[in-house]
Length: 220
Image 1 (cartoon, helix red, strand yellow):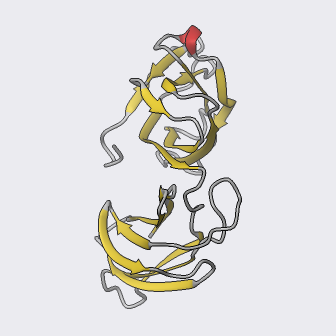
Image 2 (spheres, rainbow, N blue to C red):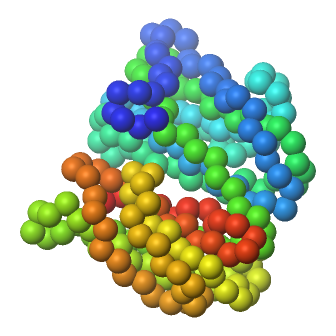
């Protein structure tokens, strides 16, 4: 959850480096699907940069985290107390239940590493790829609206030609705002939607007979 006050946190030690794991409950992953792992992380103070490793496997122990998603990396948000967005493709070859692990590996005497807004989203290989070039621009006059523009994909998830699209949904904050029916692949679309105050997450999801695409996302 990313409401500014709900997050996981790993505190610091002045003498010992961080070596703590946060492991998710099991998530079912299917063969012949593509998945995207998205999350937000933060080094609370940029003068004390935190480090994070991400992996997954079958089990809720550190030893079970056998497939690396992100090598140990500095969480280099530009400003203190600012979230940084991460997104990684997960190419899973077998169906089963998997756990995702977030491993704090910061040096000693840093501060707090925070983690929030974790999502794992998947699409069948024959479903549409993500919408291309998604942009959302807020109203210049201050109205609580935004122009959302994107291009309908021309390929499936596995890279084959996309023959047709049943519909495209535009969501804001998880709420459906607009539906575009039967757009041709490659069509450029621009729609005006209502938004809330502050930052808003806009998602575009494309559908065909195989199901939904992985959402394309942006913030406005």
